[in-house]
Length: 161
Image: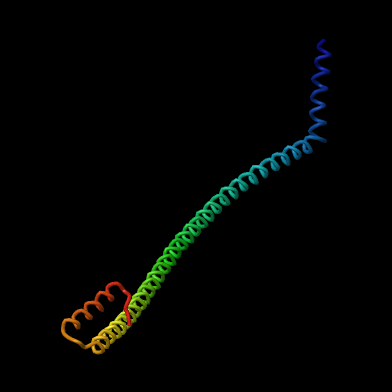
């Protein structure tokens, strides 16, 4: 049994020497390469995280700037709309004032025409009354009666020749 243990120990040491001589450097190189790949992966991951954080900050700033621009454009559009509304109201008031002025002028003209027509008709009626009085010139009582008849006809709106 001691021989068996000695053989096992000797075989183990021989295996370690052979592995060390032929395979140990290859195994260590493979482990070093693997460790380097893992470290590089972690560096790339950290770099990617930094890039993502930088992009998030950049996009956040861009989004805030875009929102500010949109808000500014909206405010300018609102102000422009109010300005246009005021211009339209002022133009409507001016047109209304012109229309009222023209209407007043038309009414004044029509009133003047009506006064002229009334004056002409009154003159014609007066002339007709005077003519009748002169044709029938009989006495003061009859003159008074004729004037009253003409006035009654004027009130009724039916003048007689």
